[in-house]
Image 1 (cartoon, rainbow, N blue to C red):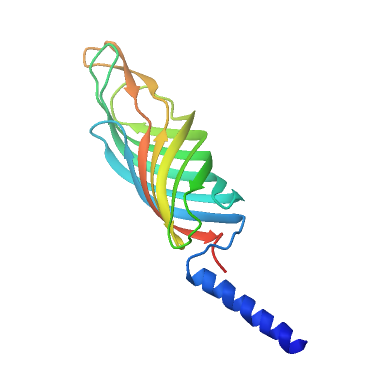
Image 2: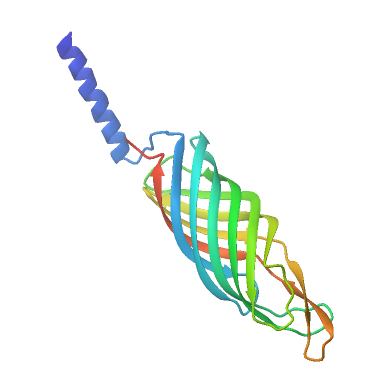
Length: 202
């Protein structure tokens, strides 16, 4: 009986090892990732910056995970569209966001798992403008969302995200002292490379 039990245990371990080697993912509910990347504002003429993100997640089913993305991004930006005048604003803008997310994975093969996802949440914005008489609150909070696509390759994650943040109106004056309003675009793209922990094979 002991020999039979030992044989079963060896067979079971061998099967699990073979499945893991073949790329079959062992279902675990808790996972997460940390990422670094490049942030590019959607406004024309803008320069990109850097971002850092972390995202704990919970798998409802093997192919659907929900989480909370916590991200910080810093970008250089030019804003030039006006409502009743001409103005160009040069500033450095920072964004700190807390977004509830959901990702759908197209396969359970752990070797490569392409996904699509989205989310909604809050974006805290901070601006440091260089235009004289530029009147924008030092910090503001906007409700927005994100769309993303990417893939996880074993313990690595690659993704492209579009952060959807509503525009803001900021008050200023032109060289003649006339009051103008500048439309400030806040959305940005993110290109990310990260490392996954948890949720993997045995």
